[in-house]
Every structure is written in structure tokens, then in C-alpha cells.
Length: 130
Image (cartoon, rainbow, N blue to C red; front, side, top):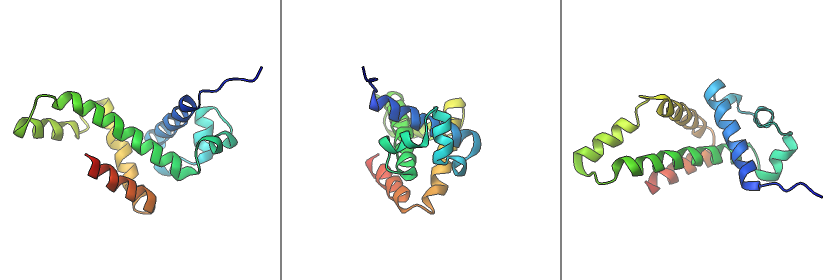
């Protein structure tokens, strides 16, 4: 009987492995080989779920942004004006472990955007959606 694989779950595992490497060692250390090893898979497995390293990085960026947006929805519910602005600004500061990790990821993605047109375009598109 063939093993049943949850493809969405496996993609998330790879994305989380990429996040861990970026946070621990920096974005340049997030090679496909390092990501596969961190996730516990072979390099070949990654090619079944992602086109290339940029696809993994873009997926990690979007995952990070989804987390931020979900958290902000809760914090900004019912707020407007200066109260909403204050909460938004505070949320972007690395004041706790979660926001410190997110800040580290974002800075890594910003630097990658300087050399990756696809990453830059994704950053711009994500910013416009907000």
C-alpha cells in the first residue's frame, strides 16, 4: 500500500525549515540542501513541492506575512485613528520573541529583494495588499 502524503503539510514543513534556518543562520545559509536537511527530506523531495529556491523563499515570505496579518486583524479590531496607528507601529517593533523572529525574517527578505527581482515584486505586491 503506497504511503499517503499530505502535500500541503509537507510544503509547510519545508517552509518552516527555511524559516528556522533564516532565523538561526541568516538568509544566505538557507540553501536548498540546508533546507532539505533541516526538514528531514532529500533535496529531490523539495523539487516535488517547489520550483526552485526562490519559490521556497517566496513561500516563506508569504507565510510570514499571513501570520502578521492574522495577528494584526485581532489587535486592530474595533480600533481606528491614532489608537489603530499606535497598535500597528507597536506590532512592528521586536518587543517579544514572535515579533523579534518576524523582524529577523523581514530584514533577511529585504536584503534578498535587492538581488532577486521576484522577491522584490512579491514584497511590493504584499505591501499593496495591506
